[in-house]
Image (cartoon, rainbow, N blue to C red; front, side, top):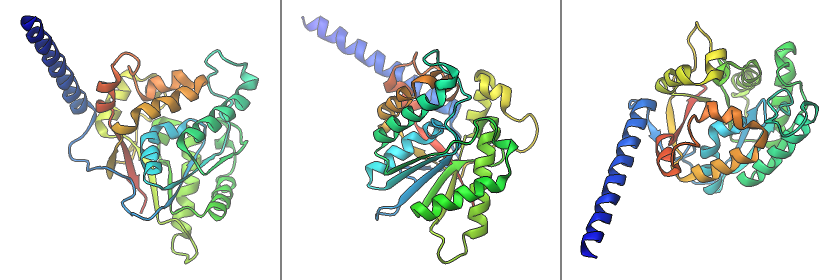
Length: 282
């Protein structure tokens, strides 16, 4: 019996050592040490209102851990989406013509998981935003800012749109221009505009293994903004998985965003993909 206990302890120690080694290796592959790591996006103790301004339902998954952390600290969340994502994959769950309604319902479920104060879903054409004037989205941005009075806004970047989606670029460019044009007005509520980005190492890996990045990421130019900092998200990974699962039709998309998640134990995966990156617009 005593020898069995010793063997069990040795097995546990070997498993822990292997897991720790995998975590160290994964982090070294994905994260640049020179990018500061924060515990929270917002350091203020008093509650702030945070608005996300995105093109598609599910775009929030790229910052889902950060949003969950903000909610846990008492900050308010407002979710704004310019399309219903009707041009995306269906996952074989609905007909293409039913996808917009299905994704709107999925987004409602995700906003409830997040505990969002408000959800705004517009009906601009998915994958057709580049065909509309930028001023159209600037008008929406100003309407949402006036209605919800956010202290902080999160969008994608305006140059690449995370991995090259033109809808992402259009929506983010609209918010960026509104922020830069209006931020000096005394009545303008937004104090900070953060854009979602990736570390240089993440981009390098994504271009090797993620088909979406390989197809759409620009081959020339400056690429994604270099992050100003990252936010630790490990504690919220299980709830982030619930959010992804609630977007039932979009599981193929998440395999690009978080590759091999289903093959690696969550304890290890959540400690490798343990941060989200941001660039501050100034």
